[in-house]
Length: 261
Image (cartoon, rainbow, N blue to C red; front, side):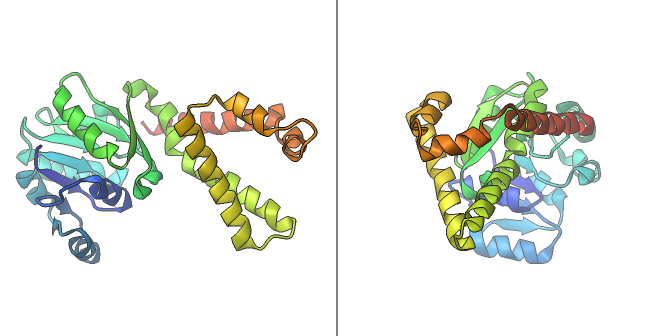
């Protein structure tokens, strides 16, 4: 395994870091001194304010800075990049072509679209890379990210859809939970109780569906006993407008992702 580094040490970077079995030798560049101290104390990693130091010492480097900071950082580290470096970008809206232009012709590239659930060890990461990136490098990235959830290898042209579905998806699920909590409170439940009921129900349902592999429609129909309480509720929910709204939300997010790229 190549020596691992990070350009940037925010929460998403920490989610990836937490999935790395042995953190010895991991080197993270972060400008905020308090954050550097926090990560050193929590994980025992080496930190620096100078990204050039990480470029010199590491060979598999996760790019985890804000989109607007990529070009400036790339200009700093590009003179130190070699054909042995692999830059793994989790930056939204930065295509492989833009990354190549920023970091130059030498370094190998991998692009990842993660989501916030990575921070809970249950993330969903889509991975893509140009043909010039060796398969073993992609496999190494997949192994690391697999320690923080699920991974899938896709073509870059699919990334706008990935961004809309799994990248933005946590906000949509939280919004649905919020609606369920508010509905429970309106029925007389305490907010804390309503949240527990909604959250555990969503978590347990997702867990069952993942582990059982059951198709969604038969599952829904199985819960909706004819004339029962669930069926009464689904009469309000199972209307064309609901799914049309969801499709419209995904399309808007995918269109925006395409615009940013």
